[in-house]
Image (cartoon, rainbow, N blue to C red; front, top):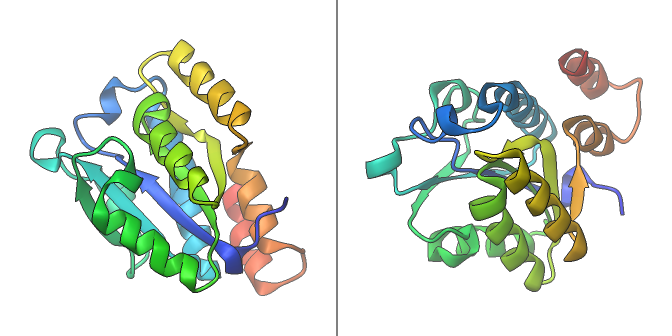
Length: 184
């Protein structure tokens, strides 16, 4: 199944100040998440961001915060799964009611909050796409275990370029010209 921008919503999970420095290649995922955010903004894909216990882990890192589209909804949570938070679940459900049944997920940590979010929303019948080059964990073994488990559960493991090019659908458009520079 290919992604479709009109059917997609993007969830950015816990890209927070105290968590990012602990991640394996945490700095490397920042530009990819920003690319996803710019593509979502350009193509009208709604963005939901979560912050796990922001009183303890801080708010979203400035590089990502500054890249959020203006209509991004940022929601605090204490459950590891974003689906376990009533406000996040309601937002996803509302967007699903508007035909957005594909969830693209990026963020941290792949084996905890990203994994639990993906698996929980998968059980509701949503199509789940985890952006493998825009997620991280503290250890490589945790990242690979998350990938294996998500694939086994029927989630899609994709890359930033896959998401953007599938959302675009074709070359030769103003959107393609605007976004293709981000992928070089």
